[in-house]
Image 1 (cartoon, rainbow, N blue to C red):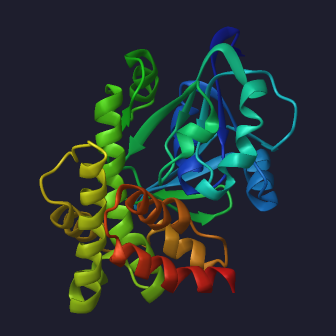
Image 2 (cartoon, helix red, strand yellow):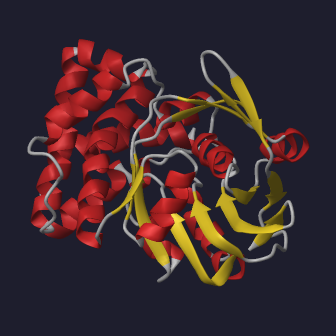
Length: 300
């Protein structure tokens, strides 16, 4: 625990300095002592010098938070919130034991599959529908509110609620269902939006893109069914269309990565679907196509 105005307060370490890391860091700074940990020099410098700026259409608010480079010695935290890109998970996993208090929690809200397993036995799976866009280093704009579900104790979800966030505790089976449900939408939308370099909603207006979006989402549903996981909705393609429609003006996180020349999370999204499909004997041609189309661009 840290101290604020002489009183004990919760200590939170956020692994990441990108859009969602800044958003959750800012909101949790209302109720906790927050430190963001990353490798992006510009983001660390901006937050360390000026806090996190949270923009809305009408206002902006600055939240006090610390920021340090990954590997900097820190006091152990009550909560370690993991929000790095999935391709960075192995790297930050090595730091988790030293960053987490003995009775502390480790929570991942990352995209894709396999992150919780890489983070160790203490890691809890979380799924968030919250969106955010990084406007500049340390400056973030929410891009659609949504619930955050945590496969862990309600006392942890209560911390998020105390910060004004819609959060709830769910059991592990429900957590897995929600994670695969989010994967269905991400598999259909993210890579396509990055390949075509268009906002999410434009995918619905292009018949060929829409057909591929629907096929990729449906394949996620088939793979999940083969694993014995029920999605939280009856129609994966319909859910992907709904998400694209409700986030029509958003640039997906994968498109944002491509536009700034950064590695994408396609391996933990579409790639994970392909690998699980191959293991279970489920065809995943649409996801294979998206993986082939985007991967060479990323490598270049």
